[in-house]
Length: 267
Image (tube, rainbow, N blue to C red; front, side, top):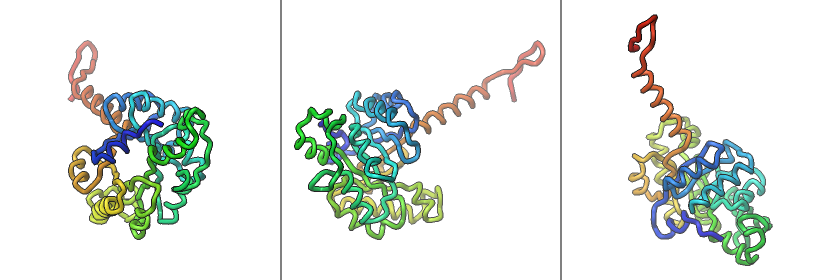
């Protein structure tokens, strides 16, 4: 099984960058991978791509030797294991609400002795049965990552118990939904958001887990100082939207209009 670039770098004490993909086109994944991002984040929670699209996006990331992370929809075990069987390098599970919730996810996504993930082995992650069966079970536990997204106040009360569990790799702080849950949507400098961000990184380090979050390039240094080795720093739709706005603003600023036989510059 192919090594995970993300896990190799994190385990070596290095930092990892990530880029979120909202558009349903494998070429966007490939462009971001060629640009040099370590990990591409595709989404089944809010977007729900057709599985064939997800397959092509995974292939695009693999073609450039980059990792691809799928945020899964909360649902049955099949929603969690299908991306792994398609050979996504890892999954991120949103809205982990407590210790028992986290334990159930591990049970569904890890093979023995960590859990009881349903076994097939006939898909891309097991080389379509060409991989030795025992090696497949062992390497799937070691070379594929499971991330718990902490984006609600409730799991903070049990965060130490969650972090003690074996079978997952990272606590990922999600400020967006957290801000809404505390009644301060979009107030990124709110004291409770700052404290939660600090606490998630602290507990992750204390129990040997990695810490991840989202942030712009301007926040990277500060977040890394807090202990965040994994930071998602942008998204395709953000870049495309800003580019289009800049183009049309430039056009409107420089264009001229015709009135009768004369052209004049718009005010």
